[in-house]
Amino acid sequence: MGPISKKMVAECAGLWLAEGWNKSNSEITFTNNSFPLVKLFKVVMNGLFKKEGYNQRIYIYSKNGDRIDLPFKDCVIKYYVHKRATKPYFIYRIASVVLIKKWKDIVQRMLAKEMLYPHILRGFFAGEGNIHGGKRGVRVLRISQKERKEFIDNLLNRLKITFSFDASHRNYIISNKSNWDIFAKQKIADLHPIKKEKFWRFYKSYKEEHYPINYLRESLLLLLQKKYTAKQLSKKMSRSQARVSETLVELKKDNKINNFRVGSACYWTAEKDVLIISKKKDKYLSFLDKSKKTYEFANHFNVDWKSSFRRLNELKKLGLVEINKNQEWVKISGDKKIWVI
Image (cartoon, rainbow, N blue to C red; front, side, top):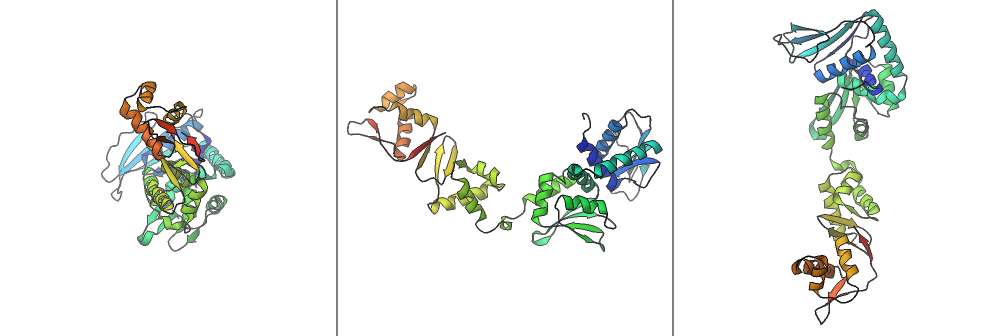
């Protein structure tokens, strides 16, 4: 891992506020069962305090005291048995009165900078957050806390995340898709690997009835004043390509849009007086300055007769060329604009 950034420090501030012993005045500690998070915390501490003299330790607790090899040679690693541990967990510790004071000052400075709030919340959620999915499509984001805390309220409010606090279950409760959208945009659940996978699985499974009726249909018609493929529209609308394609077919049946195949891609547009063709077809039209036979195209473009005939026949289907009584191809003048891709 390269040099540490403010983002990484802010994430670790959130991790420590969630899973650290923040009441201590003699040591910096961080506890978690995710090794990537412990590694991140260690890297940030080492980067912040590399000029300081200190000893660091990692304690590993597991049901059977299993020895887990860690890629660290600059700290003492100890193994312990914890019979109730369902999976191994790690405690990272620096014993230093001086450094805990400096670290607390850093955390307070982080909390005073609104631009760092997404990163702090990302760290805090990695420590105390959880994702719940129930029956009937219920999806809830929760942050475990014994009681409401001002700095958590502040983080959520500043990010425009609506919430409630359930004192009986000791949880901040966050629902509604608008809040999930904020979590997705800011990648709030992405720091903890398991929570990240679960969040995106639930988020992507949100049913599309959350959108207003005809929202997709009307939005596509506005976009299709230009030309797009279904894949491009899917990215723009943040909807599945299958759902977008289904709506495009419906719009075509209603005579609202047209589609044109160019190579392996299919382009859609709501423009009525437009034809979309490839650069190769455009070259065929340009070459047709006077009536010509198929073999002349084949010779000019250095392809076989069948290839040229197929291309010309495609132009015929578009109403751009026809064959006269002498079996020669001629252009058809029309009022439609031609878009070349």
